[in-house]
Image 1 (cartoon, helix red, strand yellow):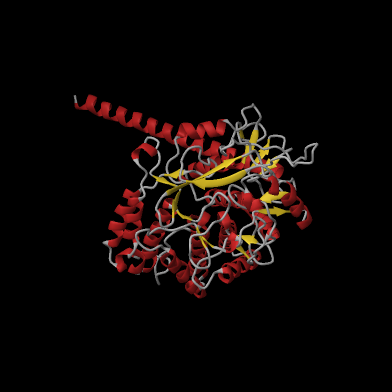
Image 2: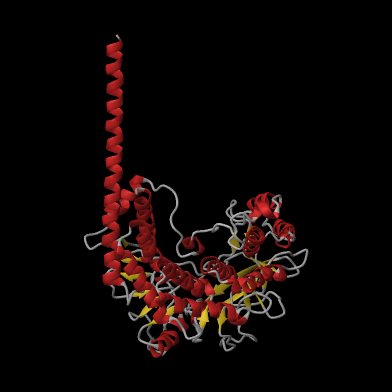
Length: 526
């Protein structure tokens, strides 16, 4: 009986070993397939799609047309969004996961494109045009100024922008490249970017949207909004993150003053009770200010939530309880401005996008017309037919903010600042990649079936093709001399209309998403 039992145990162990070996073999095969797909896809993008190492966001499958935020010339690359910086970060992530020098060279080419396009001031515009300034000005005077609703492209300034974290993210990527191999060619451009961020900071600690300062936006405003203190699109928070990363990794103690003044600006700009929130931009008198024609001088619940979360982070960086002192005021204001249940669209939203200063009334932006020549924007107190390309309402997780505030507030300064990059002798709070928004490494365990799907959809040329992307009309002038609207196809309210045909596209967004997942499979399978 004992002999039979031993045979039974041995058979179970053998079966388990076979299953284990089978699973290991499947994982190894999936990793090998992921490696092969990554390499083929990257080779196609680098060798067939890129322009001098740089990228836009979207291409027709035959590369005959291309778009960043708007349609681009063949000679142009895009810095912001899922353009050159995001692609460079993906390549560098792939290199760190695989050790394959091809990915480093791809990232290096993206960095070289950024260095070529770096402005004399040390920053970047949204677009780099390898055909030069004359070509870029032509783009602004045709495609840019006729893209209804994209007012940031109506005027060519010739300076750098912090909008959409364009300059900060480009600079962070150069920091990553420099730290990878300490190649001095990246250090010169990086130092210029650091100098710009420090020089452009206002004495009170905030930053303008663009720098060097200009005051010639041709839109009938008394003051050019690009000179205003700007929270919009992470201008201030990402500049602070960039400076902290430089302090952390380069040992730049001289940046501490700018870092602390940047943090303090959150305290300076918070409004008084009973409206303890924030606007997205402020004039020089620290009053919430009008920016684009669909951005009224208002307070924003979404920015109030984000800024309160930043203040919690600043306490974790510094141990200074000043940063926690008025978070309850922000929470109280957020509670007071909740939408009535009947206006939440079934719980989808909690707040209006804009709240009027002093009255606490919800403001709603609207638009009518078909293009720059006949289109107009306005705002009022009615939520019927709201502006759709910007968002009329928002969802704010007040309960999460409350819970995090209670948790962190209960911590002593010593406990809260464990791991702070600003604390002497601490370990790094983040990996250098995590200081970047474009894109951070993918975390988690990808589903094997999803990974297999990604690998199987790569075509014989090494492309992930997509359909039903957004498109636009090419620039043209009608018989009566009127330029065509060059913005994305959209409804009158501004909702994007995607291409309903079978047209195929090459999307950097799709490429980035797929590469992040495959890189994770390779990294975790080591």
